[in-house]
Length: 434
Image (cartoon, rainbow, N blue to C red; front, top):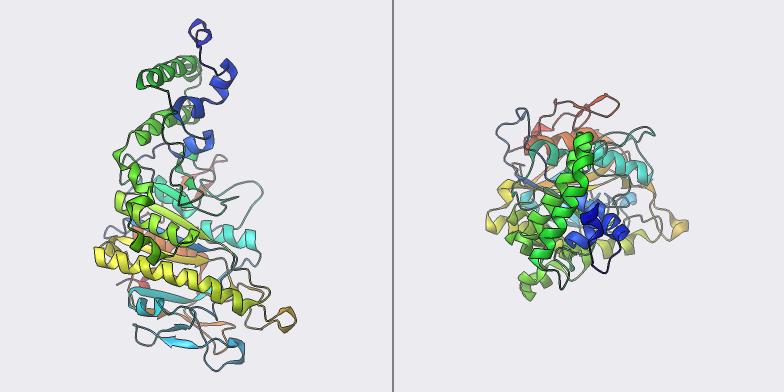
């Protein structure tokens, strides 16, 4: 303790301990630090040894994206409302007039028009879509990003395996897995990775001295309690330092892109987040989720979907075009998902809104071994019910896992010693693969 008392920085000894992550390493919070800890490389043999996807960009349309007004239009049906359909670069695939740029990219895309969920409320639907499990009061399940980090590890040892850009992941993340598998959160893509530099005036010598003192303080506890949790806690400092010193920190800096490229994606949070996601894949981040909220269109559905569609259209079309032209699409799986669709019935009394509708909705897959230019499954002529090749949520997630080569049957034990797998009982939809 004498060495601890000799610290003469402006911080109190209590601040030194409780704010270690911030004052020692320049990282804003302990949860952020925990998310930077490294993941072990995958154990077990992947089910799909020929997996083509090395990385995933997971675009989440938070709030419930209307399928009828985006990727499952029903020309001439009363349920369609005023939205017209566009022909696309894929034969037989039509999409909404709100997505004109995506019409030129549909040759890269598999549209799953036959999604079905058993959850019709937002929180429960988001949880189910991300984890393949229904919410339970006694356990938190890992999301797909956490599973990928656990089973597959890092592509770039100097960067995290799992990143989430924008939005809120309340109730989601690493679940019962160690916190090191949770996503590193990036709030604003324009700001990149904050608190990743040492404070002004903190020299490398002082920085190293603080780390040594911290390890000395922790050594007795770690020796007495040599558990998985304590080892993970101790290792997060090493991982944070590694990240701070990584030459690939520039991956998080959008100023490395030209104004023309940034304008093409859209000067809005979702557009810039998609551009950042592409950069992170290029630098070796395995799983990046981008949140795009605002799709809960109970009222004024058509105006709001047109506005949301314009932002989605510009960013997603640019992302797919860039990945294709750079040759990265073959090894990058792009996913567009949402918790459920919207009712075919138009709520005239709510300014032409649409309510929650888990019975039928649409998701997209592109790249990473997926067969482009197709629509999989079908709803009836009014978009009410799935009539062909239903895909339930665990099957959709099993398809993502299969594309990555995550072993679907491998069981991971929760703290209560119950076995769980990456997609519950889901089976990959093999008709979606090239």
